[in-house]
Length: 113
Image (cartoon, rainbow, N blue to C red; front, side):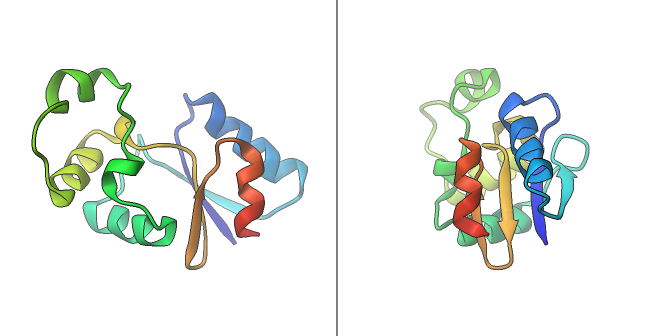
């Protein structure tokens, strides 16, 4: 079953859920705003994505621009920041077993089916 790391305020995240529903693909939703993933969970997700923390970071967010931009942050620092401020996490992230994709555009979902 696919797990979706979801932010209900994000139109792309809602599009991914609609794509799954329209294609009758079973899934579960984890709202990252209400229940932010721990740094350890994010590290696991990054491994499945084949990315570094910086690649999962939303650099257009106000918090990033005002508090993090230009600072020398380690991988662990970024994971801590994304866990503490889940708006910094690219979304939606769809996980299927040991693979994951960022579901933007929604067609990316096909890569993990």
